[in-house]
Length: 312
Length: 254
Image 1 (cartoon, rainbow over the protein chains, first blue to last red):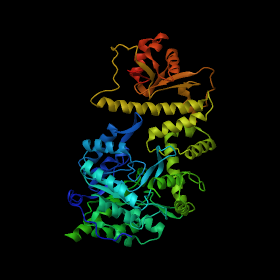
Image 2: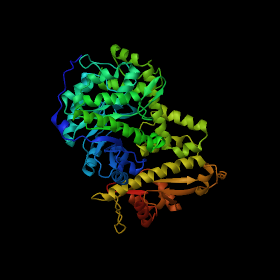
Image 3: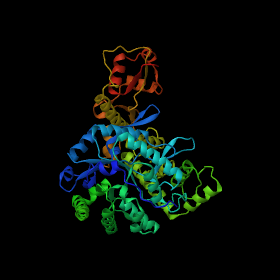
Image 4: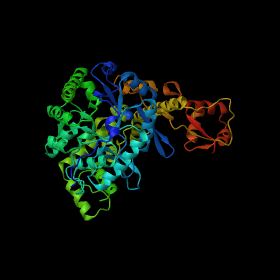
């Protein structure tokens, strides 16, 4: 297994952006004034939710939908935004989503963002005829040299193309025995190898760590100690629920107490974190209501400010 | 194991029914690593999540038609669609087009439910086309522009618009939706169809189609030369109107 030497914090990732505070995913169904209140410091936008695909010859292009974009801009006002992508499939050996990259470039022209992120995984594969098809659910990458090399090269290319920090998010998954190279070890080793080889940062999803720790029976705090925390730029917190004996990353509930503990543990150890984002799927956010969302954001803020005060 | 092979094998394991073996050449060691996954509860949950997500996407994409079907038929069609790797597209319009076309093939001809399915698909299609036209008009060059003063070139080709459809209703269409929502009795199936044209630039996306338009639509299952259409006696003004509405499209090089 790879030795856990520190991954140096690249200056551009760490210093380009001032700390933002507490953020919320953009959800069109939430009241606009929630984003304009003092409980939100920045907004995380998933550009795919503001777009639609279009057949372009034999390929597909993705266009921004003007009225959705305008509604989002109106809701967010002058708040800074970051982008969280879901359709790139950065780890697909059969090819990533070029149309998403073009969409992101178009979006950046119209609404600049401070950084952007993607999930470390894959959701497309080649079918029997070599055509790229969607699997229907994101899947984890095996911790192998080939996977690390593929994502490292793509991350470098993304970093150069958009000129802002690019972060990779650690995924939650329920598969215990993925084929691994001894030199990489596990999913933490895979993230570390990619960060070493590229200038990207990490989006550390604490709920995903919690899910994996519960389902694969390891200690989440010890796992966080093994992570390259100096490269963490953003933290995600979320809730989930039990299904068939697994704690799932369903984003359908309030943040579990254990995840709050992980946030309080991680923040003082991650010197370059710029913001904490509370994630929830839109139907559940609408169901649980504004009071619950504001309470979760306030809880995150109290931990954030406590940590900031401790650093000063 | 090569990454591409692993991903194809894992993707198929997640998509296929438990116990099925993905058709891919693997070494014995590679096969062994997948066999460790196959019986696991984690793989079963991942497959269940995949299925649930796909069912959710498909159900949203055909909400009206599915709600009008008996529960057993709805579940059977959804299960067959997901079994054919349906529901994987996260883009609503693409999923709706594919799933509603699949459902349509399983519905009886000359039935109200089939007309409803076609109506749902045509409305989504026209709405999608309207959004694309809006996008094009906002751009530097309007690729959709058609100027009535232009002469129709006999060397052009003409075909159905990508976002258009002709739906035949077997009763007054305005009576169908309330009936499917249980607010009225379903009307009897008429002996003659009421054809409605759907296209992005028709107000409300649909209007009654004339006999000339129906005949033209039917002969354009594949694009033909404009000269051939005009020879059949279709008036240039009809073609201009249909192109302007997005029901037909012209190509310069046929």
